[in-house]
Image 1 (tube, rainbow, N blue to C red):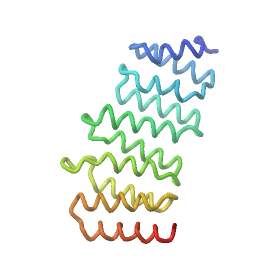
Image 2 (spheres, rainbow, N blue to C red):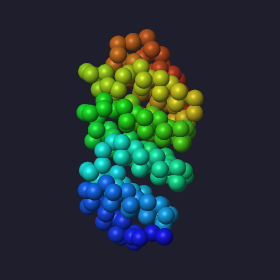
Image 3 (cartoon, rainbow, N blue to C red):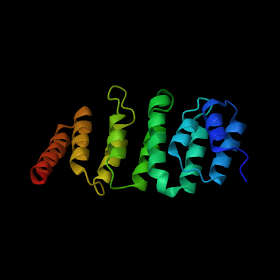
Length: 179
């Protein structure tokens, strides 16, 4: 039986700096079967939590509510991209975009957002990792043209003109048939 009301959980998630208190409130939220993503977003943005804790909470939440896993992983990827990018070279963001893509393989957003993480001057995340991810996504996404365009751009950024032209032509050809 939960100890805290939903409003008390919301307050703990947004203000507490104590991991144990956050964990207990999280457990109460799960026991209460609270499916409000806005509530968990407060927890995910709590500055007291580091990447390991965020991953732990996110994984448990996704296992508890599998139908919400796509949104959970996309949200975590965005958090890691914005907050921890200078520490882990976007590895956690890419890992969570991959999890989101696994949850909804037909959606293009995880692939497009991952490609947008690319910093060409530093090659982070590594272009080959992003290219492999996007090429895999082409097998399942509905909006293939946008993924093809991002592949062309990534190849252009690493200086592979032939592959860049190839994927741009595929995107252009696909666009002709979709109109």
